Every structure is written in C-alpha cells, then in structure tokens.
Amino acid sequence: MAVRSTSRGPTLGRLERPAITGVLVREIVNFSSYWRSSTFSSTVEPTIYLLAFGFGFGSLVSRVGNYDYVEFVGTGIVATAVLFSSAFPAMFGTFVKYKFQRTYDAILAAPVDTEELVTAEALWIATRTSVFGCVPMLVAFLFGLDPAWGMLAVPFIAFVSGFGWACFGISIAGFAKSFENFNYVVSAVLTPLFLVAGTFFPISELPEWAQILANLNPLYQCVELVRSAAFGWEGWIDLARLGVLVAFGLVMWRIAIHAMTRKLVD
Amino acid sequence: MSDQLAIRLRGVVKRYGPITAVAGLDLDVPEGTCVGLLGPNGAGKSTTMRLLTAQAIADEGKLEVLGFRLPEESKAARAQCGVSPQLDNLDVTLTVEQNLLVFTHLYRIGRADRGAAIERALQMANLVDRRDTRVDKLSGGMRRRLLIARALVHRPRLVLLDEPTVGLDPQVRQELWALIDALRAEGTTILMSTHYIEEAERLADTVLIMSHGSAVAAGPPAQLVAKHAGREAVEVYGPPAKLAETERACQAAGLLTRRTGTSVSVLGVEDADGRAPEGERRPANLEDVFVLLTGEEID
Image (tube, rainbow over all chains, first blue to last red):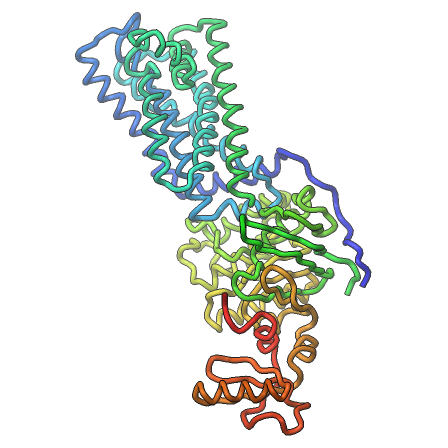
C-alpha cells in the first residue's frame, strides 16, 4: 500500500464566525430549557439588595451628595446585577460544562478551537448581562428613580462590563481544581470589590488609598458610568472609565483563553 | 479499497508526567476501511483518540488526519471528522432533535441543508419517533445511538468511535453494531477503539492490538489468529493444581497456553501430533491472540 495521504481541503483560520455562532446556538437552545431559574437568580437577588438598602438604609440617609438615596442605589445596583449575571454563572457554568457534562469535549471535537469557545461563551454571558443588568434599575423606577434618555446606554455598559466579568469567571473555573476553590475567590475578591464599588455608599468616605484602588475596580467604573448615563455625561472622564472596562475585558479574555486551553487540551 | 490513508501516525509519543500513555505508536487507517484499536484498559486507546482531534498534543512523532498535519491543521481535519466519545456528553435537558440541531451548526451545515441532515441522522440512529424526547428520558442504548448520530450529521469522511458499546446490554450492542456496519457499507472510514474482542472481530477489517502505549500486532482478525494462535485450541478444565500441571507439561512440550480463568487453553494443537492434552477442541479466536500479546495479568 502506498503511504500517501488523502486529498485535503483548505485549512481554517482563528476566531471564525461559524465556530463562534455554533457555540452561541448551543447556548441559546439550552437557554430555552433553563431561562426561568437563570433569570430568577440574576435579577431577584440584586432587586432584594435594592429593596433592603433602599428601605433600610434609605430611612436613615435621604441624600448622598447630589442624589436622593433611591437614585444613588437604583443606578449603582446595576453593577451588582452585572456581577451576579456574569461572574457567577461563568464560574459555575464553565466548571459544570467542563467537569460534569463534558460539553467542551464535544465542542472541541468539532471544528471549534478553545479561543473561539471561550469567546463565544463570554459573548453569550455578556449578552444576557446586558438585559439582566438593567432589571433592578427598572424596579427602582417604581420607587422614584426618574427615567432618562441616557439610560439607554446602560445595556451597553452592562454588556462591556459583563464580558470582562464573564471572562474573569471562566478564568477562575479554568484555574480551579474543585468547586471549593470558588469560595476563596468569592470571599477574597468578589465580595470586597462589590462592597467598595460605590453602589451602597460613596467611596469618597473611604481613606484615600482605598479611593485610589477603587478607580481600578471595574465595578466602580461601571457604577460611575451608569450614574453618568442617568444624570449627565462627564465627557473625557466617562471615556476613560469605558477605557478601563474595555481594558479589563481584553485582559480577562486572554487570561480566560489561556486558562481554558491549559484545562481542555492535554 | 483506495490506497490513500485517512490516518497516518508515526512514532507518536504522549506523556503525562511520569506516565507514558502512548509510546511510539505507528498507525495506518486506509480510506474506506474500519480499523479496530483493541487493547486492555490503560493501553493508550483513548489517549490516541484524543490525539487525533488535537485535544491532546503529542510530545513526539508525526500525525496526519485526512491529509492535515496535527496539531497545526487539526481544525480543518475535525471539520470532516465525526467523533463519538466514550463518555456521554449529550445536552440532557434538550430533545433529541435539538441536540442534532446544535451540531449541524457546530459542523457548519448551511441553513438549506440542516433539516435534511437532521432527518438523515435520525433515520440512521432509528430515533425518528423520539425526535421530541428529552435526552434524560432516553434509554442507555438510545443515548448511545444519538451520540453516534450526532457525529454523523455532516456526513464525515472519517468517524472516530471511542468504545461505542461500553457498558451496554448484548441486545443494545447488536443494534449499535448494525448502525456501525451500515456506516461501513456507505464507505465511511472508521477508527474504533474497543476492549470487546467480539466487536473488533465482527466490525473491523484490520485490528491493531495495543499494549502499554504501542502496537503489538496489526492485521485482519483472521490473519492475526492464524499467525499468533494457530487454527485450533484445546480447553482443559479442572482444579487449579491440574491446570498448573497442564500448563507446565504443555510449555515443556513447546505448546503455547493461556489461562481463561476457569480453564487453560492450549493453542496451535492442530500441529501437536499427540503432545496436546485431552480436552474440548475449539477454533482459535482473537481473544487467544489478545491475551497472548497483552499478557494474562492486569497491571
């Protein structure tokens, strides 16, 4: 028998649209089977925070800076909803799909690379986040937050933030050896970032070093951008904030691809 | 049969830390044939399968699948391959049809052809009546058939089946064999790993026996049997002491033996000229070859 290889077709490139679409279709079809629970957990929890702080804290504090407390919390809460709809589902979902459902084994046997898989998963979570992120703000309308045209930019802000946090969650799932590892990340990283994001109290009350650090917190930049969208843009400052979110997304995206490649390809 | 190779591996080595899972493997799969990778657990069959889809990257050696070099050009090769994994990874909350639909997208079937591709896969797997059933409501055999059908939606030129019938009842196994045989009849190239000897014997044109990460024998099943185990064997039953005694006597007389657990099989007795002990005569089979070449004890 001649040792001759078979005729071949063209080779394929990186980050191809059909591959990303394929992974997105899988997520969309699956979403039809679990959208109730996912929508519930992503929107109800931030809404509870809104109500608790709004009524509880709001009875003690009526104004923060130039804002009514409901305006302050009703806009800041978007960042909380973003975090709950992106980082958490990304961490747990990725780990389950990798470890228990072995979904990624099936996808990577098709003409899809890890880079495309991670990109598509993050885009999908970011898309969901752009919707879920707005829900508590819509609830805040009922309690006295005034709608404004600028708020139409909020889904976009939630999308950009959500992409970064989705990639963060995927990275953690990629580096984690077991579910228990997530506890460290939630306690040591997510909870502090979530509390010093200027959502429930202004960071101007914090010591100076904490204020400087807060500027590096993507959740804080998200909160501030949403407040600008609601109460008036601040030009270059807002662009810089968007820049921080985009940079956060890009860095996390590459880290997520690296982490998952290590995990999925022996 | 064409003289082209769908898979060509040369000197492939894959290590996991101190363990060498694949140790210098050569493998040829000619187009249009069914090749069985036969070996005990831990022989390196599954690692070989993962290497072929670049889900594992070889440390040494050359790999070509459908003319593409691996791992660099693996994606193009995967576009024309179908893979049925050993561990079920279907989306269990989706229906049969939804699972297939997702894969028509992952395998880039155009919108106009998706419906027909799904129908064809449903028919091949005999799941037309179950199209709307959720996967977690299917029997084990149906899930396996769906897993294989999912690998076929894009009419792949090469199908990789990793232990396609592991853990299934004999009846269900027969259904799957019929499915694989139909695929073979269509001219699809198949590489199938299995540790069921009967499966390899029935379906494979060529069998490659693996042990400790490399090939210890390759050829059509009948040829392997004739070459390594002869035409006939004698089964000698009895208490352990008698079996041990038979083994010693036969080996002293220059006959090959292997243990079956309940008996000793004495091989190649057609040329034994009276040296063979008394016992039940039977034709030699692939299991004799398998045990002779891969060892009687599991390490």
